Length: 556
Image (cartoon, rainbow, N blue to C red; front, side, top):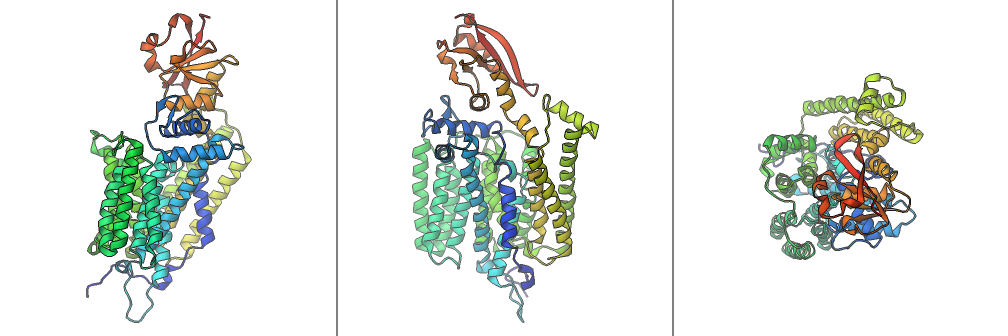
């Protein structure tokens, strides 16, 4: 007899993941990376520079930039959020204040993925097979278990960790796409009888995307979803289409065009893009492919069609974008939703294979992080310590008690979770994604505690800016020539310097000029070099590609 659905789930398999455990798990993933670190190069620190200029009244709110230079990403909403947070919280460090709205964006994204999978799982086509004598999973419990699995699948994605903890428009786009998906799922859900709430969520997603320079993905998603929704609930579908058109018009008016400026055809080889897809979306892509195959008779059902189309649009935009990894970020919510629907059809042998691979992979990564940290602190083992000294010349490690305790507690929690996983809840539907998500969280937390000083030293412009600041006389401003927005922001924020463009070469207060090597050949066309003498070349970690030239004024 043909089954209407491939999902065969008992009530015992849909036990809920404790809410306190899920919330604690999300906090352990969201907060590290936002708290206590310096802005990293390049997009992170450049975006922070634009927010800082807006907050201090130096920048334009409709044309974000740094020292008159427009940013590569012309979004508006993310910079507005950071600038408003800096203004509203003057007692905090500007970098810490600017991150608070992005903490909220990531938390909203995780919550929206949970509710999206919940409403998709409530679709009649997604429900498990009804048994002849009862005992099948209750629809509500089934939807909650899959929602837990969808959230765990998103957190487990390797590509999510760094990009979701930056103060860049990429996180805003991720949040907007997830809200758009949630609005569509609610409009089709039997548990959401009031469509106006779904339309509010839909409108919020449209607004976030339109103000984050993501109008073309919004157009592609909105067009298909409008047609899908209009066939089910005509009034809600066409209202969503109207909101979509208004969002397109708003985005075009504010950004000056429909297409992001960075979208150009790529000529790279397909191998590099394939490798990016493999590691960036791991471990959701094999589960998503399994869902597409096992649910192939329900491809047009909302629980497969909506997230699948989101994945297709995300992969396509990634193939066209200059920064493929950042564009691919918008495909992760769809992949997480598809991965959740693989679990009701997953064989026990495949589930065991995922557990063993995850256990070995993340345990090995955590062990490497601990070994290198011990080598930095004690010099033993000698080879890892020598490698750190070679890769980060000038870095002096210092023991910090709180990061050590947090890293130790996270490691102990991982050991306990592994023993819990093999000993209990073997029938839980979400069990196959517990170890992948917990392992990704463990390694991210260890990196953001034990390795944070090393990463700040190697990935920020802080050391370079502070070295340049020692060459600047007190009370002098600094002229910048050929520097990118991130370098200018670093000189201002880390070096505490007043930076002006090279066009202000007549300002006698500026006794120092910082020049990019790329702009040095044409420097004499902008300034009178008879008034300047070469002083030093300052490199970031001894890398000649990250070198800035320092000149000292001698003519006045």
